[in-house]
Image (cartoon, rainbow, N blue to C red):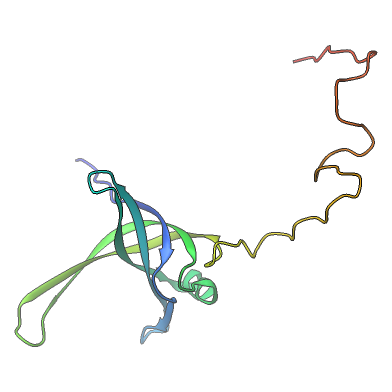
Amino acid sequence: MSTDINKVVLVGRLTRDGELSYTQSGSALLKFGVAVNRWRSDQNAEEASFFDVTVWGKRGESLAPHMTKGKQVAVEGELRQERWNDKTDGSKRSKVTIVANTIQLLGASDGVNRGSAPAPAPDPAGRQPGENPARPPGPPPANFEDDIPF
């Protein structure tokens, strides 16, 4: 018996704020849209694809406050096809959505990463952040043994 693979990984930006709701049984359901751009060299322009994403349970509840329009996210999940009959004319309808297993928040909606530490203040001596102030930059001292054991 062969095994099929149903796996999706996307990085894109939210097209709208996340919508948190609950089923009748009390399960949390977070829905949002993701836009993913790709470059079309034949048209010399970008083209956007839009995907609807669903996150179930506590993961959806905890992510909901952070899912704001424009936020960049990485989504890993699987495709699901929803099927129903149209109420107006009875025709069969379907839609493919992504059910997310993992979501990573990648950046702020305005391109500024608000979750990182503030930038360090400039050093009056002109040193770069992370530079060792005890040892000036430049070649190693003359008595430095370059005998590294690996």
